[in-house]
Length: 435
Image 1: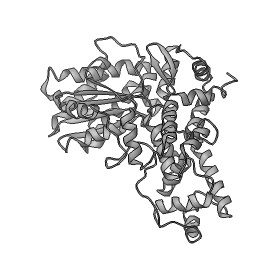
Image 2: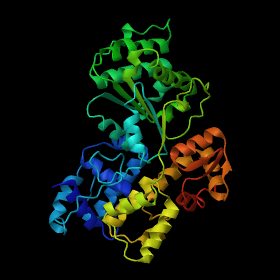
Image 3: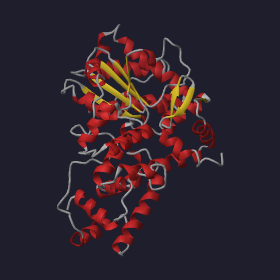
Image 4: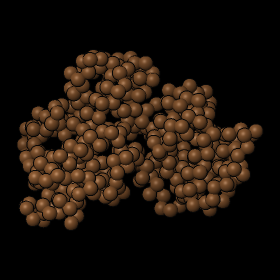
C-alpha cells in the first residue's frame, strides 16, 4: 500500500475534520521512518513542537480507529482500515504537499523571470559569486537545486547548510573553518588532510585558504560550485562572522589574481541582510550577482492555480481570490498551501477566508509555531506587537529587526518594519496582549 493510499484512508477516517499541514508532514515523514528530531531538522519547526503535534495526530487516529495508534504501530493499523474506507482507488497523485524545497521534476515550481536565467548564466562566470536573499519559505533552496542541475555535470558541487552546524562550532573560528574544509572534502570524496596544511602561526584564514587552493582546488578536474545555505545563521556569531565573511570576498576576488581561484564558484543564501559590522571593502555583500526573490505576481499566481486545476466559477470566486491575495500577498508558500487545500479537500475560498486567522485556519501550524517562538523571546514579541498594532511602519532595534525578518514576520522598508503580510496582523494583534 502506498503513502498516497494511506493519506486517502486517513482523510476518510477523520471526516469532516482534516489533517493540518504539519500533521500531514509528520505522517509522511514517519511513514518513511524518520524520527521527530529528523523531521525537525528538515523543517522550520523545533523538535518539541513536532512531538506535541505528533502526539495529537496519533490521538486523532486512535479516536477514529477505536484503538490506540502510535508512531510505532500506525502503519499496521491503517492498513487494516483499508477495507473499511472508500475511494482509495480514486487517488490524485498530482498534488504535492508544500513541505520544504520543490524537487526538480515538480510541476509546482513557478519561475520568476529573469531570475533563473540570470543565475544560470551568472554561475558560469569564472570565480562567480551569487547572493540569493529572501525570507523563509520563498523558494531559495528550490532555486539553488535548479541552478546546480542546469550545469549538466560540468561542475563539482558541494552544498552546505549552516543549520547543520553545532553552535559550539559556529562560535569558534578554528572549528568552523575546519568543519567547512572537512565537509567539502567529504562531499567531493577526497581524503581530508587538513592537519598537514593547518598552521596556527600563519593564521586560521591563511591555513584555510592554502588548503582550499593547494589541496582541494588543485586536484579538481572541473570547477567547484560551493553553496552555503542559511548563511544568516553566522551573523549571530559576530566574532566568527567578522573573520569568515571577508574571507569569502577574498576568495571571490582572488579569481582576478590567481587563475586557480577561477575554479571556485560561490552561492550564498540568506534570509535577511547582515547586521555584522564589516569594512565596505571586505564585505561579500556588495560584490557578485545579487538575487532578491520577489513574491509571486498576479500572472504567476494564476499559473499556480491552473497547475492545481482550480477553476474559478464566477465573479465571486475571483473576488475571494483577490481578497485572499490581499491577506497573504504573493508569498509562494502561503499561496501554495492555500491552493493545495482548495484542490485536495474541495475547500471553498469563502470558507478558507472565514477561518484564515482563527484556530481552524489552514495556516494554524505555522502561526502557532511563530506564536510559540515569540512567547519564548519576549523582546521579539514586544517589538512585533508594536508592528502589528501600528498602521504605519515602525523603526526597530537592529538585532530585533534582523530576527523578525529572518523569521519572515516583517518586511523592512529602509530602517522601518511592517508585517510581511496582513495575515500576521490579523492573527497576532489579539494574541500578544501580555507583552
